[in-house]
Image (tube, rainbow, N blue to C red; front, side, top):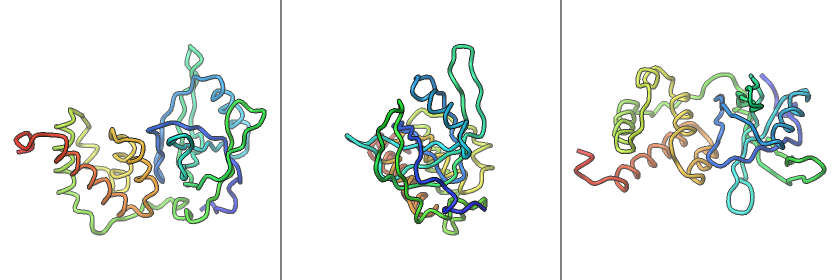
Length: 209
């Protein structure tokens, strides 16, 4: 397992609202802006191939982001790059460095996120999966969303919760709270609460029967 001490003190930053990368997850991205194409080129030349995914919040950046390693990339005919980031570890953002590069870099602190480096999925012993999936089905129906339920049911607990936290149409602050949840159990509780709140607040009672 990699060590936090081996990770760099600075990262190139890719600020993108609504895009969070959970522990041990993967995030597909398409890159087309010239400054981020330059960032990707520089990243691929680096020894670690790490990009810091972080959400813009208000006039600044979120306090926590995730470093993802470029695990795959391909160039499209129109010059866009399709990449896949594999989560390495969350980080706390310190000073944002502005220099001669067209993209931002940030000083980062990895303290407290060593469990992210484990290849073993986190467990949630109190997860009532059947009840959660029942609420999720109602939520998906009310929001007119679709999913592959076979894949959903086959996913392990961490994969399920983290994928939903990344993919569901939640707002920036909600996604950030899910990212910052210290454990899988806390993330699942928060996600479950957001789903329940949406069901009660976003649809008429008769729709939910």
